[in-house]
Image (tube, rainbow, N blue to C red; front, side, top):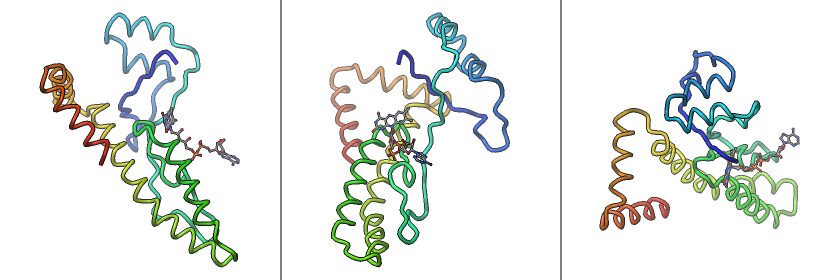
Length: 173
Ligand SMILES: Cc1cc2nc3c(=O)[nH]c(=O)nc-3n(C[C@H](O)[C@H](O)[C@H](O)COP(=O)(O)OP(=O)(O)OC[C@H]3O[C@@H](n4cnc5c(N)ncnc54)[C@H](O)[C@@H]3O)c2cc1C
């Protein structure tokens, strides 16, 4: 991958129709941001990977003996950067709670246990993903300005340590 572009898509708002081809959308969002960006848009491949950054929030994960797992019940979005790990760890927990089950009647209660133990972990990651989205893609000028100054201030000795500590505290939450 050479370039990773993310933007807030106003067309994703209900009622708004998506306008134009993917290439036209990229030009609309990113042209004029500098010579390097304009050159990149010119060499953009015909069919680049294009996706919506979104989360899945389900009120319930299972019905009877059928359950959703991984992204299907709790996609955290690529901005959270943990979807793969959560899918694997969640599948491991599912195996652990189903392992001791010895009758078909035991499956549904085991799936309840799975959801009780795993939902909170997924929700914490989703909250972190939403927070990352707000920082990664500031919603307006004021937030963009603030982010630029925080990034600049992070180079100042002393403040750099404070910022690093804050980031570590946020990750550990
Ligand atoms: C661009 C991008 C970048 C990402 N970066 C990261 C990252 O850096 N770190 C990280 O941890 N996570 C990342 N993720 C998230 C991660 O990829 C997902 O959270 C993870 O793959 C979810 O695993 P899953 O098994 O739930 O679903 P998937 O990996 O989507 O697996 C579902 C499978 O089911 C198959 N399938 C669908 N329908 C059917 C059907 N009807 N019959 C049979 N098979 C079917 C699909 O083909 C697919 O193989 C990223 C995601 C994206 C989109």
